[in-house]
Amino acid sequence: MSELVIHDAATNAAGPTGGDRLAALRARIAQVGRRRRGVRRLSAASRIVLAILLAAGALFLIDWMFAPGRFARLIMLLVAAAAVARVFWWRVRPGLAARETEAEIALLIEKQHGIDSDLVAALEFANGTTAPGSADLRGAVVDYVAEFGRTWQMPREAIDPKLRRRLGWLAVAVAISVAAVVVRPDFAAAFVDRMLLGRAHYPTRTRIESLTVGGTGVDTAPWAAASVACPLGRPIGFEVGIAGETPRLARLRVASVATGGTTEIELVPDTADRPTAYAARLPRLAESVDVQVFAGDAWTEPVRVRAIAPPLVDVALSSKMPAYAGGRMERATQGARQVTVLEGSRVDLAVRCTNKSLASATLVIDGTEHPLAPRTGDGDGGARERATEWTISGDRSPLSRLDRTVTYEIRVVDEDGLAADTPVVGSIRVKPDAPPRVTADVPTRLVLPTASPRVAWRVADDHAIARLEILVEPVSAGAAAEPGDSSTAVPARAATIPVSLATSGNADWVGGDRLPLEGVATVKLAGLGLQPGDQVRLVVRAVDYRGDAAGQKAESEPILLDVTDERGILAELLKADERSLEQLDAIIDRELTVGGAR
Image (cartoon, rainbow, N blue to C red):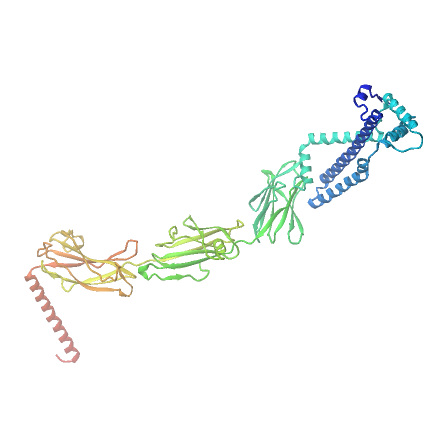
């Protein structure tokens, strides 16, 4: 055993103060006390650290072998903490709580090292403790011990063999732990995360790199807590991408969220060309389930597959006729997706979802998409209206003025990203607005060059007439390509005579119950430079009213007037009289024949 020598220089440096003759002895006893406290603390630290390392090792082995869930890991941590706490309470705490007085340390030194001295008595006398005997005797004991303390060599205390063994085991445990962390930091990181009740997995030979549920990619990271919405009642396909060691068995575990019942579906290679892709199919999703993938030694955290009812979509159609057609608003029957409207009408379309909110709605006509906008509302119901009813504004609507039959499709996506089970399609048939119908006639077809014949006209239309005019086309004699073929005649001059219509108010059209229109217009031929033998072609033209759109034109059958002089008029009158006489004779003959006498 080595010995600790306290030199006189150190003793003098810590020499007696205030007349304390045992200062050197006291300093040496205090040094022994500090050394003993250090040993006790080292023993306590070794116990608690070794207990913690052993508990951590046990936790790692159990967690790695059985991969318990969060609740089981919490129980494991509580048990390990209780075991470490028990070691601390029964093994560590007493040593840390121990306190030794100066006298106790001196007595311990005397017993352990067989020192034949009066250390304890001298300390008591120096502290002024009353004891039997003379004061001179007590002083002599103190002086003796003080002189002895200056030359006494105090032996160093050896470390307990049990503590030595414990420190050795601690060194081994620390070395193993450090080596494990250095060699496999991925295992260490996963262990720490799992002990913090995280979702990390230990590295495996087989790796699950991707998971697709119903066409939607799912994050397979343990901490992702993935969730995906799938339509209720529809089949669901699962695709799993696997890397690393090819598993002998891969399966899909499906657990009911409501009842907890589980079923397993085998994952099979997708195709021979894709050996790392595995697939499975659930025939029908009847409720929300939790899905886990197990492939070899790899597995995923449960992925919540929420069974979501698809959106139930209803279309409301209403139409407004043009103002010239009465401007009536008509609503289609509830649920009707086909309507018939008048040409030029505006159709208002509203898409309503009866069971949830929509994220988007689109109107598709001829392959062109027209996004719908949520309808705004007032009051408390506004938020629900904005989410469940969608329309398209009149400025951007392709239905603001229809002039042909269209077929439409409604595409919706609800708040869960689902579309309707069946496509919403319909058609809007347009009933065409017929052009005007015009007739015209004149009393006689023979006119003088300066005459003003009267043209009787009649015009009818489905809704409104915007303009009426008479086209006058003089045709000079001999201008026809063939004799008697007036259709190919080239007009020498042409004139357009507008016919005034009795419109009401500021309107520039006539419609409603005022149709059909009838009237007589006078056509002045003077000034056209007509000569006997010429012809005049008269056509009554009408244009209907269609709002901002161009109206349709219609013309009467052409009327050809022959220009002649007064002799021609008289000759025509004589011919008319002759024809009248012939007709009168024919009537008399018929009457006499019927009467039986002639």
